[in-house]
Each structure stands twice: as C-alpha cells, then as structure tokens.
Length: 401
Image 1 (cartoon, rainbow, N blue to C red):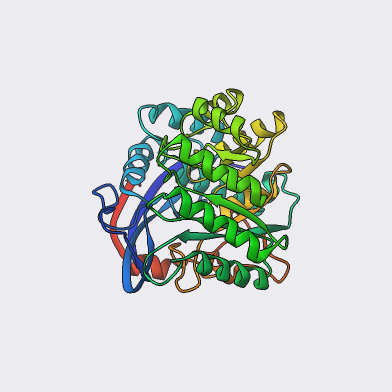
Image 2: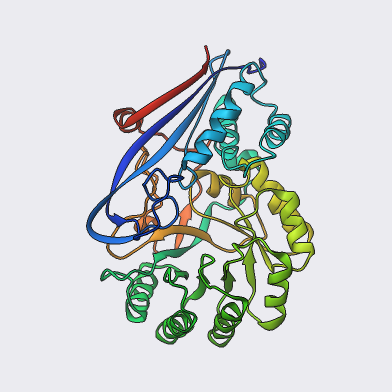
C-alpha cells in the first residue's frame, strides 16, 4: 500500500451540557475555563457546561483517523495538542513509534497530556486503512471486559452524601451485575469519615463484590493515609489508590505507606510515561501500575506501560473508560477491571455523548454479567456523531491542506 502522508489535521473544540452536575465551591480554575476539570460533583438542578475537543488526521491518500477526548479535554491539554499538530503535517502517519518519540521530546517541559489524543487518532487511521480493529492490531484476545463502577466524589447535596448513600449505590451496582465498586470519597479528606464509609460499604455488600477506594489525593498527611489504609486492610479492599496530598508523585512516601499496610496500593495516574513509572515501581512506591491512553501518550504509550508491568510481574490497571481504553485492555493479560467512570445514581457521567453507533460508558453500559464489549469495527470501532460535534463547535484549528 501507499505511504500515508499526513496532509491535514483539524482540532475541533466543542461544548456540551451535563444535567445535575456542578463544580464544588472554590474549585473553579482558569485551567478548566470555569468548567469542571477534575473536581465535579452531583448538583441537583444545575447544568454543567463541559468543554472537549476532537482530533481529525487526514492523509494525502484519503485515509482518516479520529478521536474525541473524554477526560483529557482541558485547556492545557488542548494547548499541547495544538503545539504538536503542525509538526506532523508531511510525516508518515503509520510511523507511530517515530512520531511518538518526537512528540515526547517536544513536550519534555510539559505534562504530555496533549500527546495522547493525536496518537490515538493515528491508531484509528491505521485500523481504518487496513480494515481491522485497533484491538486486533494490538493482538487483543479479550472480547469482553469485566468492569467496575467508579463513583463520583461524595457530596453534601443529597446524592452520595453519607455512608448509607454509598452502600445503597453499591447494592444497586451489584444488582446490575457489577463485580466491583470503587469509592471516591469527599473532598474534605476527613480520615475518620473516609474509613467509616469504606468499612460500612463492606459490611453492607459482604463478599459479593470487590471494593476499591480512590482518595484522589484528598487525605492531608501520611498519618491520615495510614489510618485509612488500616481500614482497607480490615475490610479487605482490592486496592487503595492515590491516598494523599503528595499528589501521587512520591515513590519514597508510598513505599513507607506500603510498609505500614497490607492492601495493594495503586499509583502512577499522576506521572506520565513509561520511564517515570518504571522509576516509581522499582523504588517500591506501588503494587499496581496505572495506564491511560489519553494521559500516557496514547495507545503507544499505554502499551509500553502494560508491558513494563508484565515484565515486572505486577498488574496494570487502565484508568478511565473509552474505546481506546477498551482496545488496550483487550490486549493485556495482567489487568483486572475496566473502569466505568464517573457514575452516580442520579446523574450521568461527563463523557461527551458523541457516538452514533450505540457505544456507551454510562452506568447502564454493562451486560448482566458485568462486562462490556471490545469494539471490533475498523480502527477504534466507533462512529462519531459529527452532527452533534459540529453543532456545538466553538473553535476550529486547521493545520495543512
């Protein structure tokens, strides 16, 4: 086949609304443009305006690759994508390893969050060119993925506002078929409240589902993290994720925590790429690794991390949902659950409703056995609703022809 030379890249910014969702007071930032970037919570009667962007890569021989961001659509990530795009025009779209290496260097002074959407679109392009799925290109062998319900943060608004509310929602998810449930606690990071909550949820669900907790770095001190970790030990939690305010970046601190508790620690969501994750695990800072095609420099980067974990004999858990995430997980042996995030009994998640093919990562997307399918169509295996995106487009950036 012909070499597919990149002739045009378009990046489309767009907005959409999510009902019953808001930003906790004091957490709106210029970084997020006043819209939810990370701190979002149930807010009955409110409507949050979310901003995301789509990447379209076209080649001179008529190939096209697409990707629409899920959780990486922040202003800072967009700026990095726009920084990288012009340098790809005229390059071979299938030379993904070389492009990966060049983009990684180009963003060496930044957090690499704008790299992933481009790499994912390149994989989508290659799959469509050859009429095969990204999953098959990766050697994927999993057709369905066991999933866990990953909650929104606790709130004070009548949603997940108590230990009883968290346990009721856990039972709802159990009845739907979910084999596992992950708690995101409250933004205040009160160690006693967090420990009481996770113990209560275990008491209510018993041993009928696996439980995890992600404190999202809200606990203030190592002492707080040890306190909650002991509760995890008592309740038999499957993992303990991002406990406290080192922001998930200190291998030394988490090695100390690992020495004090029995529950496996899941770290490295907040450090980017295979090399620093290798340093983190080799320094004894975590039991499991995190990988995310959006956060970790695309499908190319995510698979490097999965293979690193496999070489070290540890598990690698894919962060967040999406078609690229399903493709990556389909080709991983050393992983446990697909994350359906963020979910709540009374509001949808903040993933843009951009699919015209029935694809979904909402709470009800699982089958009765608690699994989701891996898309098997060409490329990522999804069809985007460009009528929806174009109708809500706010800015278009075009590079090349």
